[in-house]
Length: 330
Image 1 (tube, rainbow, N blue to C red):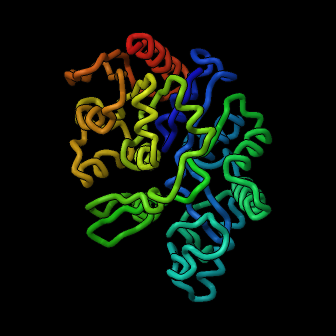
Image 2: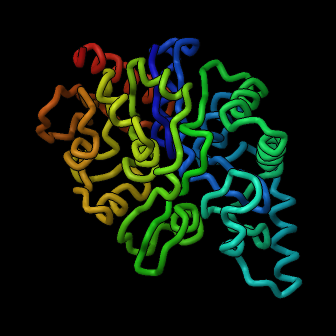
């Protein structure tokens, strides 16, 4: 039995080749929900959906976002209407008094759908409409995610990190903004000054997550701050990880990050943007998988391989290194 902590694109890319190494029926994936947004009244769970769409064989693997060959007629019409009506473009937050009102899926992450700033495909949007409707019927996010996983014929267990709302807020030199506004709307250009996981103090990990963390855990090459950080901010998660065997794959080769905003976010939160910084962020990790070209000297066991993941064969190679690291860590 093995559990993957998944956020961003790093761990989903690793999962692309993991099935031949870790039996899918014995694999659980815990998805980060700190990046979730409510856009135009629909709850969008980007990190959960990347795993959902990949497992269902429909993920757009050029972008690692959304459904391949999806149409975007609704998105285009929303933009046209906003332009024609003279409305300002997005992102547009809902008013402060609406951020925590109504259904309990918000935590300062509610955006207007007017000129929506995230391009949502039409089939992709159907998932968000279904998810939000089931939540409105009284189902938990965990139950809804399992229902959607069944619809996409996933062969792994996919669960969200919490049924409670958590919002990753990036504090920058241009003001505070949700992670999706920072990364999607502003392309990661503002200087990061701090990162807050709003709502984490009140949120709890589900029983399903706590049970999954009793198994071996693999943290793929995901962003330590905004992909894994929201999970670690939940009460009891760090303690649970300290009690089990954990292997982490560095998203860096020494101080060079493979992709994404990890370096800027680590620097902005006072961490060293490097493999050494990742190791410091994961004191509970028992072993690491590093790239062959990464000479970082760590105080824990290391398995080295080529950690670049461009296709399923690459992913399988890194997954085998994770299995070896788990064996070493025991």
